[in-house]
Image (cartoon, rainbow, N blue to C red):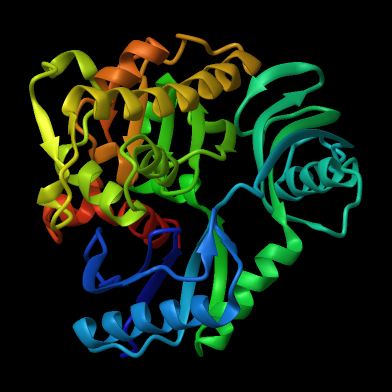
Length: 379
């Protein structure tokens, strides 16, 4: 009997991750067979700027996953993200087709297609997802699933997630150049939500926030459906660059300093608590206080939270998400991130752990692979 193998690929700014899983008969949850992680080269803000380097990174990640799983990597489900993602909405209206007025799945499909027809045609844009947020039957709103109901007129309000068509083609070309076929692709935070958010959180109202290397992307859910999404072009690498400038050191050294001594809370550190650069660069005599380091990190994160606040204001959800914010991504590991997020956004905050994979991966590994694990769940 053929094995049901699913492979996820997440091409990030910092790393390229390939995760191989198997869906076994009689088992509710996926079983992780192997993981491959390689340094990301040729990628910036989710955008390919060097085809050769990006192909090599994907090839390296896939080879490691093949080695650890024993499964050849022939095809993948791909996470898509980056600063080129855009979000909009559209409405579609159709007449119910059946004579008895019962709404069918075909009517719902026609309504969504009608919503797409209202979009202005842009050959440089590719639709990743058209997600129905709300239906109206004969003007009655707040309907999540109209199939089986009776009416004459069906309306749908959709959330549309698009990306740059040329940039997506470049990414697909890199995967193909690595000898791998792409089964399908999904917006990264939408996939991550599958791994870390519970049904109850999505019903109550929650934001998934992914603090990545070059961007901070988010997805807002309410009443079980995606309400809003977006990408903010600031991430962990910007924090590293700020540290390099502030401490007058190399970016690689700044990244090490952030990893070892980073914190989001300046008030937690007395000025006398210092970081000696000699610990990272031989012969370097300069030293800086941990308080200064935390102030640099805090300032850049506050920029992200200010923009997030504006996004919540757009949809009238400022301080109105009962399940709060669930934080994932590399920068979510910074000490004090939960306290700072809670202070700035004024909502409950927690780390997003892929609870569905708790029995197959340790917590640290699962946390670092959230998007790829989410892609597996999505697939």
